[in-house]
Length: 210
Image (cartoon, rainbow, N blue to C red; front, side):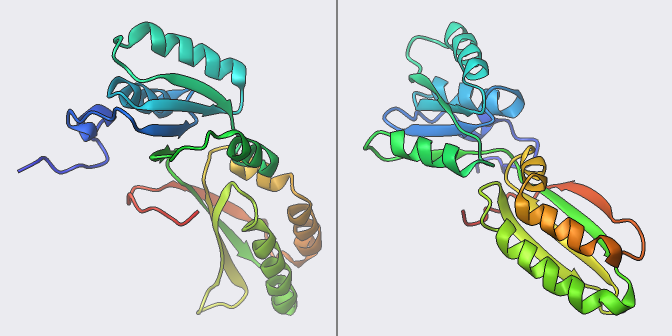
């Protein structure tokens, strides 16, 4: 029986010796950490790998380092600019992608942020309305996978914003949007106390629809 995969499984172990010749893959965040290792293992198995990075310069440095360390029968490695928090960047990569299938799209683990909010009782309905508008607009950001607004059943003045981001830099991109600034300014005087947030890492292995 094959060993069960888990959170401690390496990319090399997950591949289990399989060859990926003829397959193409995009790896985001590929110029550091787990992204580099994922790209290395895929290329070593024969896949053609695109390092999707915000910085082409950093991506090219990683490409050269990988090429120097990989065996000659490894798959080709190319670099493309991709910032998942920028719609134009996503469109540009899609428009430039060759007319062939994409077999694998590897991205970093999801980042989940819970924002705890306590609202003044007289502003509950106005807060809900403003936050629904912000959530709706936020879901159109390429870096956001999910944005939920939940209310405490025991205390209707308390809420949690459940924000799920596709990349570590997506929260900063979110806070630079016009709709976030509008929401922040609208609800500023509605707060009964300062907002607090907690960050979580997804360990379930679940995949959200893009």
